[in-house]
Image 1: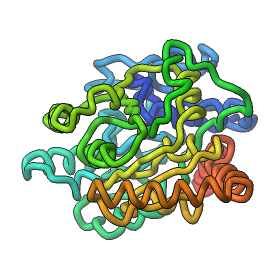
Image 2: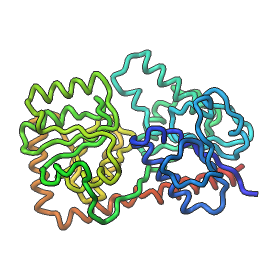
Image 3: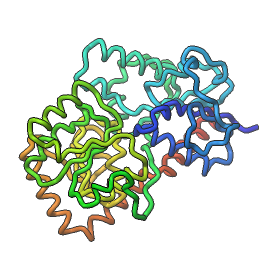
Image 4: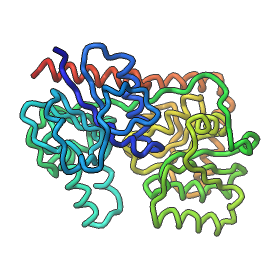
Length: 359
C-alpha cells in the first residue's frame, strides 16, 4: 500500500505571487517524476494539470475545521504563515517550508511583530521537519530559534526554490508592445519598502533609461511615497507600473529589458533575478539576506543606495557587461540550472521518501 502525502497549495489563491509560482512548479515537477507515492494536494487548482482525484478543494472554513489531514503519513505545509494543519499529529509527520523571517528585521510595530511571530509559531511548533528555501533563511532561523516553541523538530533542511526556466524562444509582449523599442530597467515584486524600489526611482534622473515596475501588489504608505517621489522628480513619463500580467508577457518584458534591478533589503529567496538570469540579462542586486546566494559571482551588487552613486555603478557595470557578453551570458544562464523546478521537486520527493523510511 502506497504511503499518503498531503501537500498544501493554499497560497495558489494568490496566483501572481512568487510563492504561487514556486508551488505551481513543485506540483508540476512532482507530477512528472513521482511514481511511488500517493500524493494529494490541498488548495485551488485553476490552471493546474492535477487530476481531480488528487485534489482536495480549499474552503474558507478549513481554517477552523477539517477532518482529512490525519489520514496522511506526511503533511507538507508550504508556507510558514499558513492558517491550516496546525494540529499535533500523532501518526503523521509534518513538514513546514520556511521562506523567511523578514518580519523580525523589518520596521514593524511591536504588536505587528508579535502577531506575525505567533502565526509562524503556530505552524512550526508541531513540525517534525523544517525546510528553509535558502542557506540564509536557515541561518536566520537557527539564530532566532529560541523565539519559537518547537515541540517535535527533528531536522532543518535546505531546499532551494525552483521555477520552470523560460524556453529558448521569442516571447510576445502582447498588450505591452510599446516597450519593444524602449531602453528600460525592470523590477518585479510587491511595491513595498523592503523591496527598495524607491532607490531605483532616485537613480533614474542620472540615467537615460525608463523604469518598469511589475507589481504583484502594493503596501501602503510605501506605494504612495514612491508615487510622490516620481512626481517630485518629474518622472511620470519614464516610470511604468504594470499589474496582473501573463507569464508570456512577463517573460517578454524580461527578454526586452536592458537589465533587472532588484535592490531588495529583505529577501527569503529571489525568483525575479533567476528569471532574468535565465535570459542572460545583467542583474543588479543588494548584498542583503539571500540575494548573494542566488547571484553569486553572476550578478552585480550595489554598494551604496545613493541615487547618483547607484547610477555610476550601474553605468560602469553595464559597460563591463556589454564588452564581455560572449563570456558572461553563458555563465549567467548556466547559474540558473541550480534553480530548475525539477531539481526542487526531486529534492522534496527524496525528503518525503527519507521521512517515510524513518517512520
